[in-house]
Image (tube, rainbow, N blue to C red):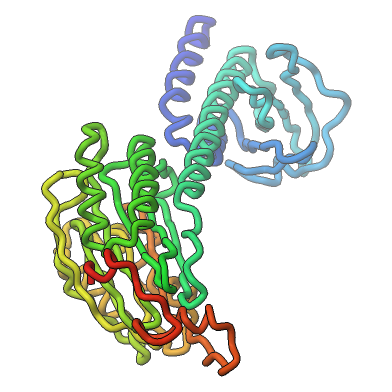
Length: 423
C-alpha cells in the first residue's frame, strides 16, 4: 500500500470507530464495542481493563482468542511508541505457543482522568504508525464515552437519591396501624418523578393514608409532588374528612397556575371503630385483601384530579378489620400499554397473598405478581393493616384506655365538632 492508501484506510477505520463505539450510555457496552471493533479491523485479540477501587483493574471486555492475551510474559521492557498527554502508548513482543506476538497497551483517557487501558495483540507483525494512531483514536473515543457514561450515572444516582428522599418512608402512623411501602422508578435511566405516598397521624388514634401521582416526570413533577405532600400535612392537621381535605387541596393547587395536576387517594383509618373512609381525586381504586388471600377493588367515588379548581369529592365509608390488608398504589403498578385498564385492575384483584404473610411480604407479592420491576411508569405502593392491641387492664392508663374507647363512652373525650360533621 502507498502512504496515501494507508492514510485513507486509517480515515475509514476512524469513521467506523465513530459509528461503532459509544452507541449506548453503558460503559461496559462501550468497552465491548471497542474490543470488537479492534478485533475486526486491526488485531487478533483485544481486551479492555477498567480501574476499580484502589489500584485494582478488572478485565471487562475481550474479543478474539483469550490465550493470546493470557500468554507468557513478554520479553524485555516495553517500547514507548508515543505519548498521550504524558501517558505512554507501550508495545512489547513475546512468544505464545511458539508464535511471535506483538502487544500494545493504550490508556483509556477521558475528561476526568484515566479509566483503565486497552490491550491489543496480533501475530502478523508490529503495528504500523497508522495502526497505532487508529488504536489511540479508538481508545480516546471510548474514554470520552466512558467519562460521559460515568457522569450520567452520577447524575442519575443523585436524581434517584433525591427522589427517594422526597418519597421517603411515610410518616409514622399510630401504633395501632402497621404500614409498608415501596417505590420503584421506571427503568435504569430513571429521573425524579411525581409518585408519592404519605401517612399523617390524627386525633383519637386515627391515621390518614395518602398516595398520589403528579402528571409528568422530571424535577418539576418532583417539586410539585413535594408541594402536594406539604399542603396535605397542613390541611390534614385540621381534622377534616378525606373528601374535604381533597377539596382544600384542589382549591389551593388551582390557585397556583404553575402547579401540575395530580391524582390522589386518601384513606382515613379509625382502628377503634374498625372503619376506613375513602376519597379519590382521579386516582385508581384501592384494593383490600382478606384473610384467605383474595383481593377486592373498592368502588370509591372518583372526583377530578387536583388542580382543576372544580373538585367535588365524595367519601365512602367501609368497615376494616384486622384480618384485612389495604393496598394503595399509583398507576405504574397496573397499567400496561395496549391493555384496557379494567384488564389491568382485574389482574391485581386476582392476586393471592398468603394468609399469614407479613405486610412487607404482601407488598413483595403484589410487586412480583405484577412484574413491577419492569413497569412502564414509576410505581409507589402503600399497604396498611390494623395492628391488634391487647385489652387494657382495668387499672391501665386512663389516657390510653380513652383513646381506644368507643366514641362518647366514659373516659373518651368527644371528637371536635368539625370532625363529627365530616362523618
